[in-house]
Amino acid sequence: MDKPIEVIFLDQAEEFVDSLEAKARQKLFHSIRKTKERLIGQWFTKLKGSDGIYEFRFDENGKFYRLFAFWDTEFQAETLIVGSHGIAKKSNKTPKEEITKAERIKRNYFEEKRKAEKESVTKKKN
Image 1: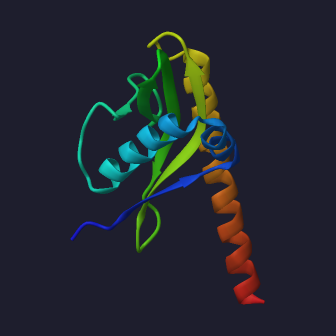
Image 2: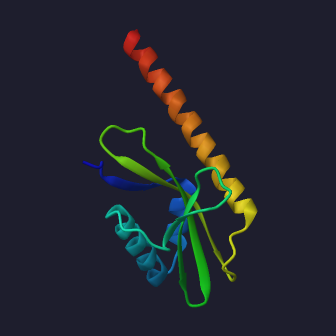
């Protein structure tokens, strides 16, 4: 049986989502619901040439929105999709610097997670 999928937002992603207009936010959350139900579509795709970066993609009123994300499958009970940050733009092309930023956020996330796990193990031993 597959573990349930949960979606969490890091601070920059949360700020992006909070800044969206109501209709755009609805579209994003609809895409997230479909992804959590393991439905596959253009709304959540892996970015070619990236180090495991995905994007929730949608458009509203001539604007193109991207919420960058990555998978964290290290938890026993659930699989996480971690939203790193988002952008709104007028073209459908995803800027390379935003992919690089998402990769940097992903590396930092896992470094911090491993650091916290080591500290937790150390505290349990003492």
